Image (tube, rainbow, N blue to C red; front, side, top):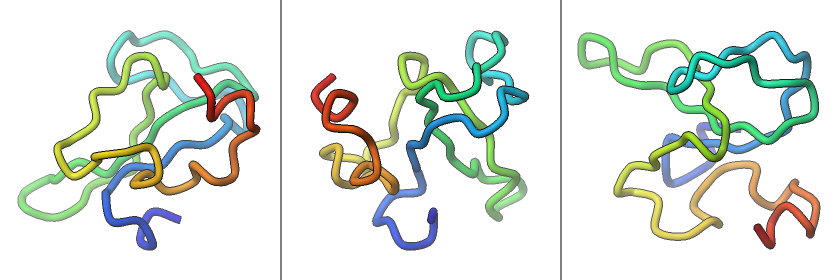
Length: 81
C-alpha cells in the first residue's frame, strides 16, 4: 500500500474502470495502469486521486520505479515500459 513506500505514489491496475484521470479527465479503463497519490489538503494527506500512468508527473521523492508502491506487482512487460 501507499504507507509502505518511501514516496506517496503507487501504481496499480485499475480495478473497476470508474476512476477519472485528474490530468486529462478521461476515464481510466478497468485493467489499465494508473498512478495514484494523496495530495496535501490543508497540510494533511487528502483523498487518493488517480492519473493514467502516461499523465502522471511524479514528485521529486520518486527517483526510480522501485520508489513507487506496487511496482513489484506489475507484469514484467509493464515494468519494461
